Length: 205
Image 1 (cartoon, rainbow, N blue to C red):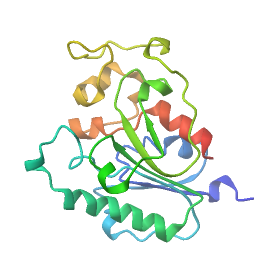
Image 2 (image 1 turned 60 degrees about the vertical axis):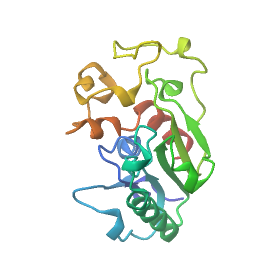
Image 3 (image 1 turned 90 degrees about the vertical axis):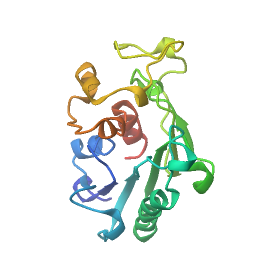
Image 4 (image 1 turned 30 degrees about the vertical axis):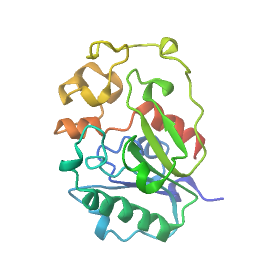
């Protein structure tokens, strides 16, 4: 049996490291491969990687961007760089994350689509996960079941705060994100929901 400290987890395009944070806390050998220190297009992975988490930027795939302003080739370059690393590593599990959008047209149907509130984080951000992994069981099936709701901005006509419409200053109102130090609104919106990260870890140790 591999010792926990010898189980290497690659967190590709991981930003704040939120997705891999539970692994790091448990003693796994977590490698945060993210800009500006690392560029996945030129990264050579170590041997014996146990798991790979990848969250390539959603900038070119988001429904909020018009077709005229998209650079799909630029976005796919990063996505395919992550997939190439996964293919080289042949890990025990792997997952590629992106908010629900045009990436479905290139990677096909995701293995999992979830909302953060299903895992206890009180906001919405519909997210797709592709890969080979154990699907974490959601904690809640309706918004009404979610405890500890926060006074976050909610668009008129909606009942659930949309994470994509919040700004980085909102982090002051979200206790579970106090570990992060986003420099831009984009950095803030790319943080993996901690509730989902913990659930994913429990399902994929």
